[in-house]
Image 1: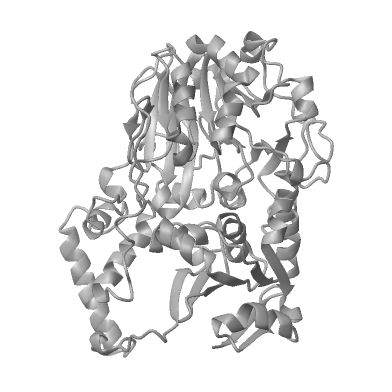
Image 2: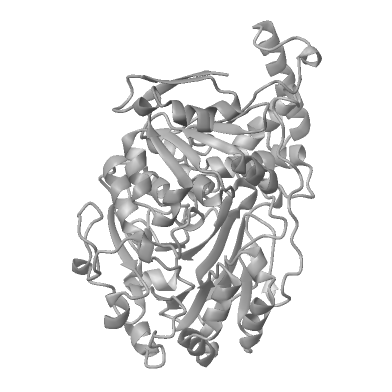
Length: 584
């Protein structure tokens, strides 16, 4: 670590595992902390973006910032910022809270657009049920009183302040006091209330998600060096045009000399558009670094613990335990101004004199897998806790596989000759996407069992956090989207987080004109109702008990898949819990 570095700007992503990029700002030990800016558990940490699966990614690579650096997530994590309500940006918040609860975390600020609070509050009271950390929420809309009273600052402490822009013409950036924002002190927490309380925060009027607009830009001021870091998240080319003509972008161009780096989280089709090239060209200061938060390959796998196990099982039976596809959609035409790198974690060091180093890859290149790598070899090398590390990894995997195969055959758990196994078009394919974990786990994913029927249509049993990402890993993004469009029913056994938090990602990513049948507990229905109203026409909810005599729903959704009987049976687990009897 450089002796004069004070902050690390780290991009985390595992797009092969369906985990979208997030930015971690980590204050390092040294000058800033010595000025009383640290906490009892270490230098502060901030996260921009909480995509679904981010907690599992952090657990798998807790020390990616270095052996002397803070772990992920840090006990000193102070705030999480999200720019959209989409699960790609906010779907990991509840899992992160569960992780912080397990670590004994004390307090956390969360900031995001209008509509963030209600589903978070409902889930806190009915699904995850945590008592700490204390959570303080800033919910900000484009017409928010927060923007008119204190135009754009949504968070401020001794280290940094965060301003936001929706790219609208009525934002008064021309009279914004930049020096005042730099000198601003830590927010008075008496203005906030814990998320368990039923009132909204920061003087906002009660609003629902139908009024939500995406935050296009997050402007982060590092106070000690008076430098600015931008995070741009533009969901469409029209959003690019909106930002280009906004007062905010005029403010950016007027303060180019203060900008250190711009992190681009926009989708690939937007990044490759002519409008985005125009946006990049408008920043003429050659000292500003533009960093693409997305990787080139799009097929890097970072859940190395579970993938190492899969490699061993694949050597037992390659047909049953298939490795992820090596190639998926490819992207090209990246703007020359963007620094685009592969890797699970890339980082920029910020020095105390206000300068920054080059973008570097922090994770071991063998700890993730991309489209050009040999999957088995890289995974054998990449498991950071593999007992075979440092030896003959491929041979050790094969030895372990041979022993496992012999054990299974001896106990008659598999057929001695897998080649004789019947395979035909009339078989229903069953894929275990996850087998459950009470909180985000390094080795296990949220529950999800995919049933693919001979007709081509499919059904999902349980949908914990990360199930959509597991589908991307198993099938590749293109085929996962195809299978999701053919999914007619999601059956959820009970209200625990590792069985139902993934439903939202399925709804957001599904591309089909057909309504999705969701069968589950009442709490699932209420949680879905608290989400964006635009989702409500995409699904039909039925409680377990209501399906018993509903012949119309059976004919519409289940009989096309060849299901002749579906019965939910009450079980002793928690209230409103059911098992399933399915006849095909």
